Length: 541
Image (tube, rainbow, N blue to C red; front, side, top):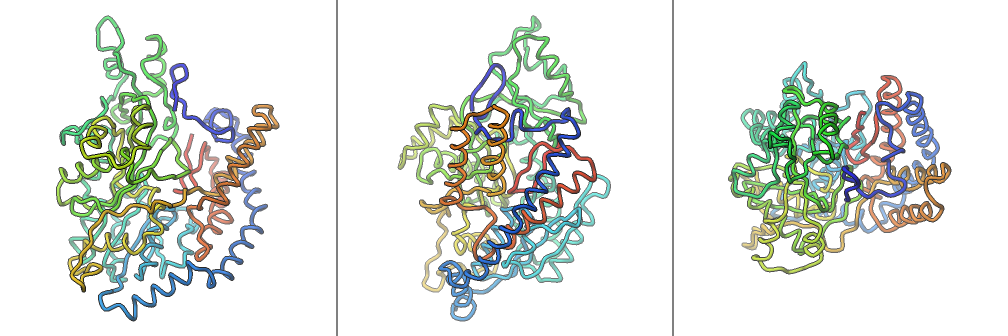
């Protein structure tokens, strides 16, 4: 990440969908139509090959090491283990990679998995077709008009019908608060337990300004952050002197709500002149009904974390380098000073919040460039040094829900499932028969592969660089570099949706789901700028 002029610029590959390759609201309508049509044609062109891979995977799967292990493990736990009791688990959010990963986690650990998700256009989500799912339910999506009542009723009825013992919520950004409401009602009206924060805690963590205020009250370091609901309030923060002298700090203005049109705006404020600053703020148009936050800019790389917290204790944790639209996941070594500092920050937050804190907790941090460079590679630091680094990392926002980085735990199925099930009152921990109860922190294995999504990389690392070359925007060596990078990902990395033993979710995602969504965009004349293959979110513009 660097600063050019008065904008933050995240370093992108030549094929990244940014700059001239990313459409905006002002782009001609024919370009938006062409974008949808070309991607539909691309899916149709790749469909035979995708189908061949899926069928081949099903044929060879029974003979692969991973499939044999899963089959043997499930059979052994069901018939031979004296301490194992299969549970019925509901996982929602199966259209997203994180939900699909957690469903596979419980399946591999020997449990019965029920899946559910929203399918607003009646287009089935990819997780519906997973081998891990015994039954799937379509849920009504909460809206501003109808509220969450019908959604909560359907969830409750589903839980009672299927005798669900544990609900693992993998909500998207738009339904996290509704899941908090649902969790409170479900735990009152059914025997089911939920991996989901209460509605009050979810609301506090979800909103950028309330999260920062709450974090400051807990005594943890935060960047300077201000809620602004008018142009006057924004200018008062940026120009505290009545003589209009600027503050020493630089700020980024972020929407509190889900406004995709300004999500990628990383303009540094104040601008070089007062007139430019006023013009930019006027364009963003903060109001009481469309609030923004002005947040201090910390120069340095961004990181994200994902953690599972039960009763105020961190049970699983991973940290990764991050970006505005993260589609490549490479974990930091769990023993690195930087990862340990972020873990300490997360643990401190959970402990100070209290034993009622149970759910998924994800933080985004900014770290000074020099500190990050040293702390990333230094291993085995003592607690004093870890604490010193912790005091110099700054959380910029919180996601009180599962993060896509959960895919990095794909091979920790048994231990991770145990951590989730530990909140059940009658749960018998693994190893209890020999007097040993392990509650060690779960982290990805040291040799875990990096993750990518082949559909995203095919477009951003193969097709877009080639189009850029045809427009004389990039050179032949840059294009070849991107293509080599794509091949390296296919050969050495791991796809976030595809598994040899469970190929149909990935097949459906690219052959049917995305083409269906592009058809919907054409029908509704919806303009979008970017797609996230891991969450299936389309960003409007």
